[in-house]
Image 1 (cartoon, rainbow, N blue to C red):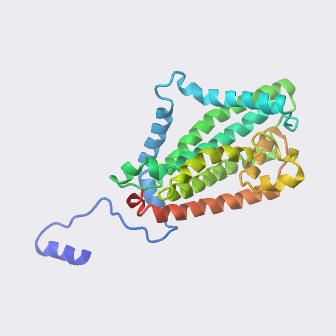
Image 2: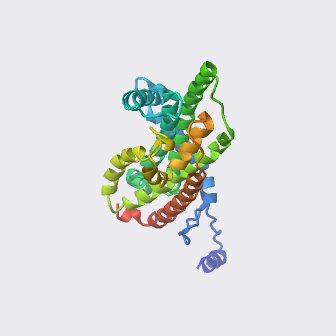
Length: 294
C-alpha cells in the first residue's frame, strides 16, 4: 500500500511525505524498543527532574525531608528494636545498622510502590499522547535513585563518624558488589511493579494489597535484624525473599557486620532477573490495550 501510494503521489506530482515518527505495533514481547526510549531521553530526564522537585514542593522543610525521614526511622528502630526489643545488630552500632538497612529498603519500596500504579496514575496521559510507555516507570526508578544517593551520603557520614570514633569499621571487598546490588534492587522493584500495575488494570484490589503488603515485606527482609540472628528453622523462609541476599551483602560490604551468604546472593540475582523479564513481558502485553479496560 505504501508503494502504491508513493507511486500515485509521484504520478500526480505530489511530493512524497516523509514522517518524523512512525508508530509500529509491538510484534514481540521481548522487543523493548530501547532505541525509541533513547530518542525520548529528554522526556525521561524531564520527568525525573519533575518528580525530584515536585515531591517536596510547598513543604516547610523542603529537601531536608531527604534527611529527616531516614534519621527519624533510624532513631525509632534503634529505640524500639534494639533498646526495648533487644534485637542483635551483629556488633555494629545500632544507628549504623538500622540506617544501612533503612535507606536500602526505602529505595526498593519506593520503586515498587510507585511503579505498581503507573497505568492507573497516568491513564489520562497515555490515552492522549504517544510516547514509549516504559519511560514512566523508568523515570520513577531514576528519581528514586537520586533520592537514594542523597540519603546514602548521610549513611556514609555516619559510617565515617563511627570509623573515626571507634576505628574498627572498614570496607571489605564485598563493597565492590554495591553497584550490582543497586541495579538488582532496581530491576526487582521495577519488574514486580510492572507486573502489579498490569494486573491492576483489571483487579484494583491489588492496589490495597500493595499498600499493606509492602509494610509486611519489610519484616520478612533483613532490615531490622540480621540473617545470622534468625533461628535456623526460620532462616530458610527469610532467604526465600530475593531481597535478603542483596541487603545482607550490602550491609556486610560496608560495615563488616553479618556474613556473605553466597547461596542467598546467587538466588537473589536469578530471582531479580526472572522478575524483571517477567515484568517486561507482562507490561508489553498489557500496554497495547489497557486504556480500554482501566
